[in-house]
Figure 1 (cartoon, one colour):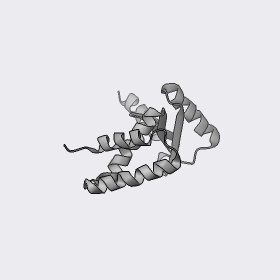
Figure 2 (cartoon, one colour):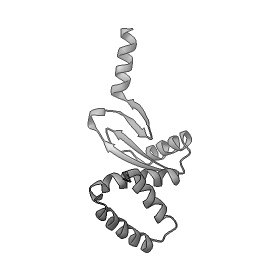
Figure 3 (cartoon, helix red, strand yellow):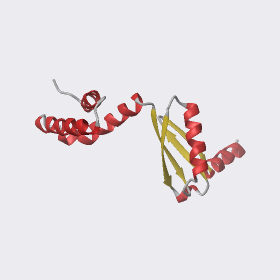
Figure 4 (cartoon, one colour):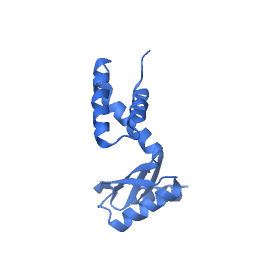
Length: 133
């Protein structure tokens, strides 16, 4: 029976639960040896990506990306984190601010399967579409 990346990620999650850092290090070394033995080392990055998704879901962590023309200040980051917390069941919000000078102003927020486009470019396009109608 062939095990897919998601199953390996679930296995890694289960065997690392309730372990201290030293034990996790040992488990990961053995896990990598298992992947090598099963000729699955090439899928390591996919397995880790799935593991992170499982970990975040089980620990109520939401990772969000915010695209903005300039770096967000602490107040804006806090507001965005609070907004996402209110829209989800997340206890922890991990926010990654990515600078995109093409946006000029505003921001695009991506979390989970949601995209909130509050960029100036999007506002102008909305206005243009409403005028054309």
